Image (cartoon, rainbow, N blue to C red; front, side):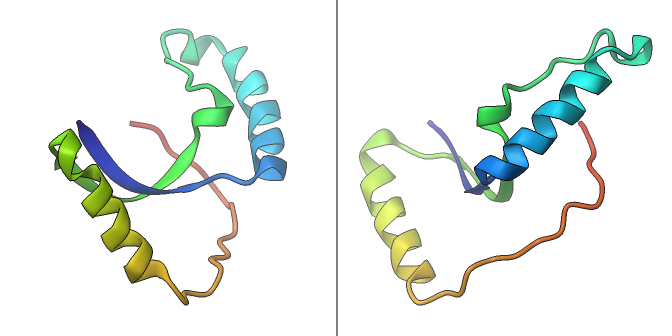
Length: 83
């Protein structure tokens, strides 16, 4: 299973990005662009690669332990990119 550590995009940001995505989808230069459903948008922090499915609970537990006590993350949305 391909695994990564990610931060979900809050609902209010999803709404703003949905509007932007709808606008951009109408541009001829982006006709061949594959749009990701807004509910799937996230900020990837680290790609872990292939992880055996039986190891997922261990990975999840380690990540929860590492993040416990961490403060909330605030990031301004100033620009975006694609790949």
